[in-house]
Image 1 (cartoon, rainbow, N blue to C red):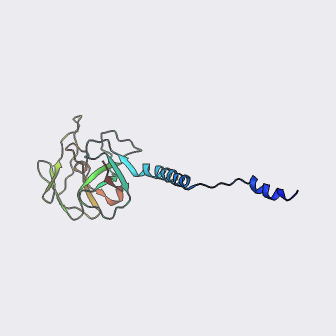
Image 2 (image 1 turned 60 degrees about the vertical axis):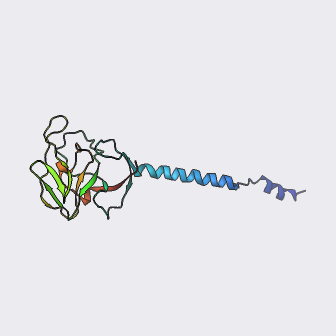
Length: 177
């Protein structure tokens, strides 16, 4: 009579096996959790009217920056800004208008050009009538420096605060929508 305890003990052990459908479901749920934890830190939503796009995917690749790329950066010299940037979230998203080795110029009417391409005109005052500084530069854009522009004529960009340096770039932003 003691022999039955061996077979009964095997029956008492719970078997935890998943069928193929349950395995697939578990993998999908695990993948969704991993992507859900990783993806929010890789997306940025811009509510600024100064850009054509609103949602960007962020990448750390900063080696191959060219004109037209969108960058996320924190410019070190923003003490003159009158607008209310949150000190904890002072990141800007703008498009590269002119890069290292290109010729940047501004004329007497405050119109900026990179080579033969017009980048926009600097305004004299912001929407509240406060005077805006104008970045003054004519020449070759220095190494590791970028002139950033928005796609809206009223964009607050390098026309007012000057070049950003490669060290200030946090991400390259790929437009999604």
